[in-house]
Image (tube, rainbow, N blue to C red; front, side, top):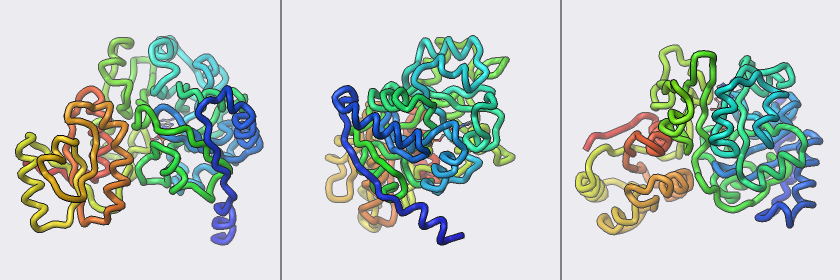
Length: 354
Ligand code: AMP
Ligand code: MG
């Protein structure tokens, strides 16, 4: 068994660069034919890189789980070319089309009851399916050329930070997939917002670039699940199953510091006298702290820039090989809620009040 597993993972991975899908259409076609033939292709999206396979083929779903080392009860998102394609795979409703009109294509995933066309392997055995229409031109062209829904989780080894550029996808998945498309840096840098629709309203399962406030402008009632706030549910079976696993985590322990600007600078300066630590901080904070092992993120109130940088910063900080990594706890509002949700898991809930 072990031999069989390792043999499957030694693939020759072709790496190609596509910036403009119209100019590179033969490459898009080749990638699409790999998907149609049951193979795996890593592709850029506006959120993070995806690890794609044929979303109607249970064998392709198995390959995705194996390539990622992901538990198979953690379902995959189906990526569609346009919102109306959902009719073939899910039981849609009015709220789905209201959200689609406002946010699709874009960084929003909607969960609906699934139709039998979606294999149980793709949904981890759940009766529901997650659907998203990416706005990235390469992702869109690939899905359209494949002519089928592409099942894709983030293109990282399970538990590691999601890749926001091709370099990190190559680091994790070279030899495990047939092709990696390098489409440059991801514009958003955090995975999609996930919302589950039911007859009574909607439940926000994972915060992302489509914020809670934005969703509330379209739907009458949106609840926030405890998992979205970074909390675990009591029975350890969260509604978004991915939320129960250790996630986005660097190998050095990450500690979040909760307090005002001056306290943060003071705390770090003090710690650096005795500890071998890396610090994820804004350029302004880096100037105040000085010295080595500082990994830059966006300016203090620039949440979009912090989101773009977060997963790369975690990987860069990890590579410094320090005993501990410090970062600031973001305010949990707007896009800050998505940053907080990722950081609190990466830190395994370690927060120090300063
Ligand atoms: P990733 O693609 O790595 O961002 O992971 C996909 C996320 O979507 C996981 O956290 C899953 O738990 C979530 N997901 C996918 N399908 C469903 C579903 N049917 N119900 C709830 N969550 C889902
Ligand atoms: Mg993921």
